[in-house]
Image 1 (spheres, rainbow, N blue to C red):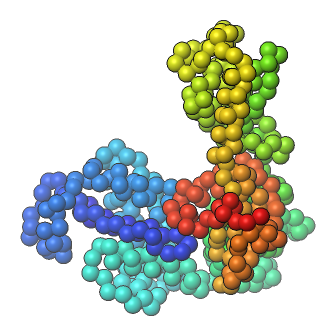
Image 2 (spheres, helix red, strand yellow):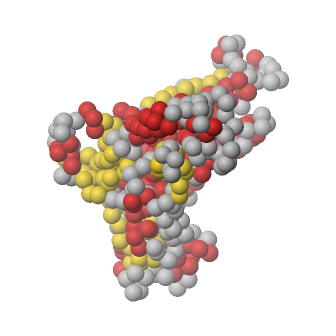
Length: 432
C-alpha cells in the first residue's frame, strides 16, 4: 500500500480531506513507480506505514467506511493486520452497491459507475479518486432500485409488493405487521426503501421467517439518522415486537446517590435503579460510575470508603487524598460541604443543548433537545423560524423518555459526528 486518501463526511457534506504517501519497504525502483503513474518525488519525505497508522485510525474510528471494491478493502485490512491492529471490515463496498442498483447490467469499475451516474469530474490524484468514490456513493442511493427480488417462499401479496416498491428513499423508521395487524418488527434506515427491500431479498433464515409473517409495511420519515435511531428505540420499548431482539428490556443504569448516615456524614454510593424517578447523571455499567467517583474523590479530597469506592469498616486505603473523615480526623461539616461541592460539580457537567438536524423536507429543520444531560425528545420547525428563546422551540418539542438506550445513541452521535458542535445550540445561550 503506497497511498491512502480519506474523506470524512457528515449530513452537511465533506468536513475533512487527507492524503498519505507511504514509504514502501522494501524500496520500489523509480521506474516501477512511474509505470504506476506515481510521482517518485512524493515519497522523499514519506513516512513508513506504522508511523501514519495512528493518524489513519483517528480519521476512521467510530465511522462508517466506504471502499471502492473488495480488493482495496482487503489490502487495507491486511496492512493494518501486519502491524498488529485488527481493522474491521468496510461498512459499504461500492462494487456491491453498484451491482445492486443496476442489476448486474454494467460491470463495475469506478469509471463505469461515474459514467452511469452522470458524474462529471476529472480524476488525476488519489485524493480526487477518493472524492469521486464519495460522489458515487452519495448518488448511488438515489438510483431507482432494481425490481424487488423476493426470497419468501410463496411470494408476497400484491398490496404488500406495491407498498414496498413505493417506499421513500429517505431516513426513517419502518414497521412490519402480521395478518392480525400487530407490529412484529421495527427498524430504522437512512434509506427506507433500500433497507426494507434488503429484508425481502435476503437468504438469511431470520429474514425469510420475518418476511413470511409480514403482510403490511408502514413507515415514518424522520429526516435524519439520529431521530430514526431514537424513534426506533422508543417504538421497540413501547411495542416489544416479536422479531426485535435488542432494546426490548429496559436496563437499569448506575447512578450516584447521596445519603446522610447515622453519624451525620454525607455518603456517596453507586446505585442501580430505574431512571424514571431520578434526574441524576447515569452510567452504563458499574466500572464507569466507579471511575467518576474516583475522579470526584480525588478532586474534592473525599474518603474512598465514604465515596462508595471501597467497602470497609476500617479507615480507607487512601492516605493522599482522604483528609481523615474515616478515622475521625476531619470535621464532618467540612467533609459534607466537600461532598455537596462534588455533587454540584457532577451536576454542572450535565449540559443542556439542542442538536440541529435535517428536516423531512428542505424547508424544515429537525432537532433533538437535551436538558441537564437528559434526553427530552425531538421535533421539527420551519427552517426560517428564528430561535432566540426557549419558548421559540419548546412548542415544537415532542417529549420522549430518557433511558439507557437513548443516552448511548446520543453519546455515539457525538463521537461519530465530528462536526456536530457546529449544529448545537446551548440552551443557556437562549433567553427564557
